[in-house]
Image (tube, rainbow, N blue to C red; front, side, top):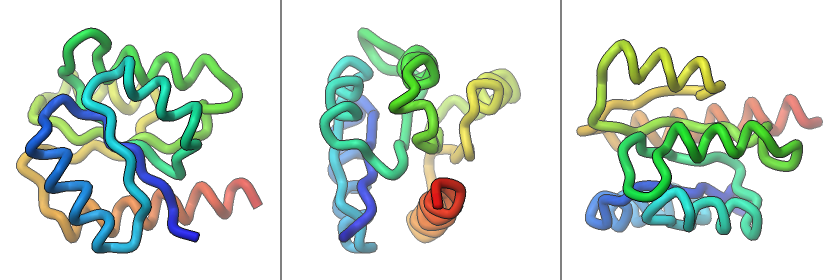
Length: 128
């Protein structure tokens, strides 16, 4: 059974391309184009990890992440930020919220795939 990855990002071109690459790497991929849609999907799909953008309409990445932290059922899902906002402030905010990693756009696919494999593996070991 493939590990599930939820991508939450409003850039539809990026999500389509990333979803194809992650599926090719063996992941089951689900996509939400904003935080509200992501909230519904995370409850239904129970992903192994979440790739999260910062700046989205309706519900920002940090707001979405905060909601994950409030629910016992979702707080342990690893979050990897993937954002064009590569500043010390955004990185600090992400890690203060419990992010496992912060990857800047543009990103290297091989690096992101390896990072997600490591994050999912670490989480599985912690839950064992």
